[in-house]
Length: 355
Image (cartoon, rainbow, N blue to C red):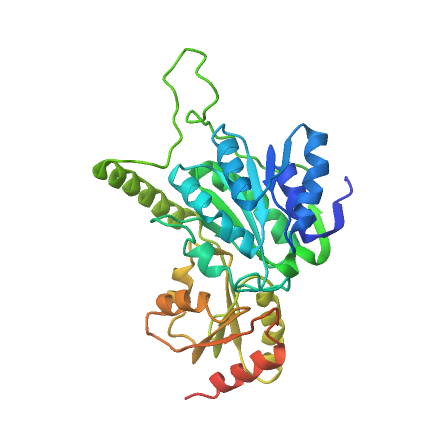
């Protein structure tokens, strides 16, 4: 039996390594803390494998380079952090309309504005709700460990190709900077998808393919929007991912994603020692949002608690999913601070004591 490929790696390096393993052909980006190691890794590795690495002059340039490269059917990606992602939003909206598969990594730092370089989850709105204009959705994965980060990067490329849609890996600065052991597979499963739409030259044998995000006629644009919405409904039906932990008969159900969900699992252990059963609903896809899990347990606990490293963003989707059937409390920290087990446990006790 062959030895397992287990390595101690930093999250940002795992992102890049996973992308290379699943056939990424090109990376276009601009350095910004706390994700710059992704670009460092790609600068070296892309040359070794015959791929393309470009450090663009700006985030705006980078996303437009991704747009162009994706138009040829190549597997491409970019990465940035919060204010850098904000600068990319126009290009992301264009890419969604043009139905271009690509992977976008956002290693979130605190804001608003330039904010600071400490970890946060305050990009939920701009990523999940669409920071650009128009009726579009990005598939958004939110890993909570470095192992899951690796697996979801690979999956993201496959999903992007399958649905011709931009896919985002949304991780906080902790996931980008921390080191954990990662077990890599012997070989990645790469979905081979035909791309007859790609602009690769006609060889004088067919009509030109056109990649565009502009439709002047109202009915033509509406038809395209209807096509996009049908695709999004298919993604909702097939790609929603969630972890439900200890929810059956729970006194309190906590919901969190990413790094915060790891803290909540320790709270669950602490609560059990006090005779309080706490469950966890952890969205792995932030879009599509796992509404069915919240609907299933809406009337089970005495109350829900949403915990985030933000002033309260995902909590809006939780309340919509619960649809008034139960109370939803919120606890969040901002500025790079992290919710503590002690503070979360205090709120859990208060909810559990309700009649």
